[in-house]
Image 1 (cartoon, helix red, strand yellow):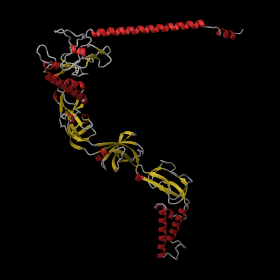
Image 2 (tube, rainbow, N blue to C red; image 1 turned 90 degrees about the vertical axis):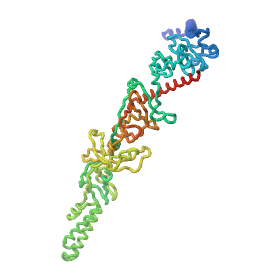
Image 3 (cartoon, rainbow, N blue to C red; image 1 turned 180 degrees about the vertical axis):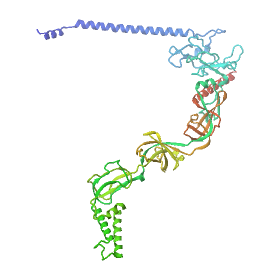
Image 4 (cartoon, rainbow, N blue to C red; image 1 turned 45 degrees about the vertical axis):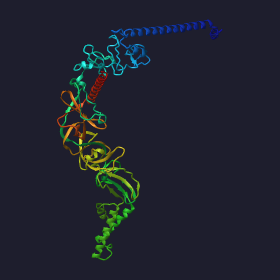
Length: 559
C-alpha cells in the first residue's frame, strides 16, 4: 500500500474519545469562570456594604444637652439625603457619597428656621459647604459667647474664600469642601466690588462704575497701563492691488488698405520697439497706385515736358500741378502714411514694390496675429503696442475709508519683487461705483516706470497718505473694548482703584493710536492689558457683596 493510502486510512479512524475529552475540559473551564465571577460579585457587594457602614458611622448625629440629635428629629424622619452629582445615591442619614465623596444634601432642603450641623471627621469632610438653599447661613447661627451673628462677629476681620467657588466663605483658613483647594484671604472691606464692564443702563448699571482690587493681585494679573495724550492722528490708508497697462498708452496697428505681409520685423510678442522702427513690409496694389499718382503729380508740378498740359510753364499750369500734388499726398495720409514717407515717395521715379509700416510709439508688441505671407484686410487689427513707461495700480479701498482719499494725494508703493524699494506715485482716479459684495471702491494710482523694471500684473502694497488731524485726545487702540453696542475703557487710579467708562471713538491712526472724542482726558491712565481679568474680578466681588447682603437681610428677617 502506498504512503497516500496510509494517510487516508489514518484520517478515517474514529476519534470519538479525543473529542469527548476536549468537550469535558471546555465545560470545566466554563464552570470555573462562572464560579469566579459569582465570587467576585459577592466580594464587591460585601465591600460596598462595609464602605457604607464606615461612612455612616462617623456621620451619626451627636447628642446635644437635651439628649436629641444635631439634626431635628422631624427633619430626619421626613427627609432623605442625596448626592448632587449621583442622584441614584439615596441615604436615610447625612454622610458622604460613596462614589465622589461629596457631602450628601437633604431632600427637601432645610428651611431658614432649621439648623443642620453634620458631624464629620476632618479627613473625610474638612468643612461644610454652606449655601443659602440647603444650609443654615452664618448670619443665622448665633455665636454662643456673645449672641452676635458670624457676620457681625467677623466685621473688620479677614474672610477666606475659594478662588474656584466664591460662594464658599470661611472665617479661618482651610481647604475648600468642594474642590479641596486652599482658601485665599478675602477682606470684607474689599468685597465692595464694581459692576461688570459690559453691564449697561438697562440693568441698573451705568458708565463710570468704580471698583477696587488688591494691588498685589493686579500685579499678578500682569495689568499694564498707558497715558492718554494729546496729539495728531496720522491718517493713512493701506490697500493692495495689481499693476495694469495705462489705457491711453495702448496703440493698435490697423491697416486702411488690403494686402499681404511680405516681411515682418516685430516678430514676437513682448518685443520692445522704438517710435519709427519698422514693424513689417506690406504689398498692397491699392497703395502702389496712390504712390504712383503722387509721383506723377510731383513731375507735373516740376514742369517736365509733356506733363504740364500746355506749352511752357505758365501760372495756371503751376497752380494745377500743385493742387494735383497736394491731393495725392492727402490721399496717402488717409491711407495711413506719414509726411516723412510721403516726401520720400515723391522723390522716386516709380512706386516701390512694398511699403514699410512703422511703429507710431515706443512700447512693447502685444497680440501679434500676423506672420510673413499673411493676407490682411482693411480695418483688421494686426498688433498692439503698449507704452509701459507709466503703469496703473488698481487698488480696492473700503467705503469707510473713501472720505480720506482724494485725487492727487501722494502714494508709497512696495512690490514683492523688491520689498526694500519704495516707489512714489499719486491718486489719479476714484471709481464712482461701489462693489456691493466687497463693499470697496476702486482707487487708481499712477506709478512711473522709466526704468522698465515694473511689469503689468505685479502685486503691490500701497499706502495712501492723507491729511493729519491735529490736537486730538489720543489713546492706544488696545485700551478700548468694543462690546458690540458701545466702547469701554478702564481708567486706573491710585491704590488699586479702577473705573470703567464709555468712550466715543474718532479716527484711528496708523501708529496704533485712536482719537477719543469723549470719555477720557489727557493725562489719565488707561489699562491696555488685562481688562478682561479685571472685569472678571470686579464681577466676582460684586457677586460676593450681593451674597453677603442677602445674608444680612435674612438675619434681619429672622430676628
